[in-house]
Image (cartoon, rainbow, N blue to C red; front, side, top):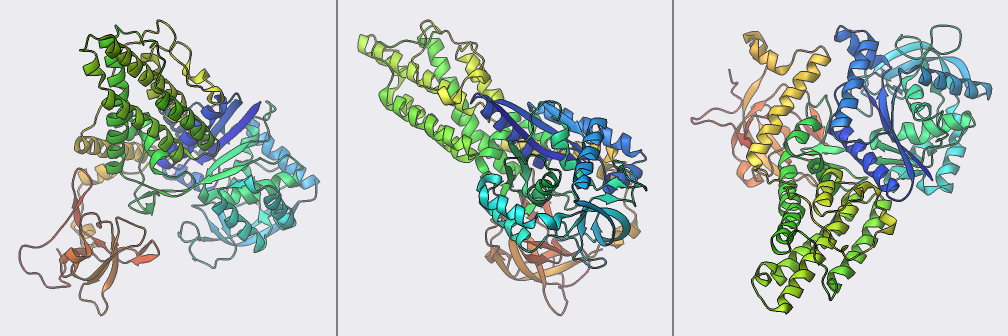
Length: 640
């Protein structure tokens, strides 16, 4: 049985960040799950290398678009290899075989009467590579809020309007085509508002796949990129895809445009589009423009691959938005992995080595029936959750078994049983340790898709000889250990981390990654900017004022944010939202004098406009310390 799944085809406008790692790690986990269910699972990932934004970035970096795109594609492959991602195909949209597939699908749509020549005059968002026909000149993009550009050019159009009813019929006929339900409802609402024909070629840029028509047309980047899912496996008889795994910001392209293109070409549709949520940093979406991007490589070096994967799958309900912080990451690693699973494995294996000469015992009266029954329940629950991509619930289920075995060891005290010479104590010792070892085997199999590296280590230390990846989730059963099963060399799987040191190290490594990215993009890094000093003229542009907090309140559903009204000597107090709620209560802030950067562009956080920024120092663990005054300073006074 085949199972073909894909990640997004990632845009080459920077190094892979944690959002890319989230999508790709989820796809990797699903691939492993399907293989452990007996499927021949194939995973495609790749890079989207055409379009106006790439053309401009290459020019800014002093490179040709080909050179720029190739350099970023190398970094994506390198990062996935470092994160242990088991992808089977890596497609670049610069690949000639992809060009042929795009031109072939375009011609099928044209031959079927769904493509016609025309002209477009309106707004375009270069950042999102999105036509914004409802916007006026300089209006912001509805997705990224950046100013749009006015574009006038000859194009070829796809008759998207012809597919409105067919798409709605698809969503009604197959509710699982778009998941989760919140995304499905969003797409249905969008389509019901009416679909407009879509420009699928450009004539004002050069960097793209040539269109087989007269004139200097290249394909619109989203027509081009979506077809990569097909061109990656066109020769392997794997189409249609069983799953497109994407972020929610691109669900419209995958659940509306893509099936319409395929309908127009009379080709099979993908079976499922699953759009997961965003990773939020201090309750705000991570993005380059906000300067809050986190990269996976520093985390890998400090916390490890599985430490990152565990946090992403345990703390974030798949399909919903979730918050990321270094503090939460290290805290979860230490509590659940170092003190939890890692400690259970170490204790169990060390006692087998010490009290049983390194051989898993075979108790005469069998294994503990209570742990056995719970393990059977956990196997069933976890398999159901994994099948439905409910990763957090799957981990909760497995951890219930781990906690039960921890409690079982404490109650039976094998370290005391080993000191007793009566036969009943020896039998109980053998039963206790053998039960714990079998539970660890079950846990290792269930966790392998999510924590492949660490479960492999536990598997080998248990003395298992068959490859862990070859175990079948759908055939997993509670089984007494084989006679003479000798454990392997014991080593720590999850060494405990010092939170402060780990966070500081990740922040330092993050700065290096940013400098590497700046070099790739031809930018001057922040570090270089500091070394070359800031001119007094530039500093004078920063308008910092003394402010007095008049009111403060917590922002609903945002545990880190405070909304304050701050008097800086203007007729009306400023509305300012700051990520300090975990360190400063509203009561502490009212009446406090603070330093405000007053001339920043306003930004919206959780629907509240923030018109300024409070100045604070950042401790190694990320906690803020507000700047203040030892002497009286009048409200509105400017800092110089």
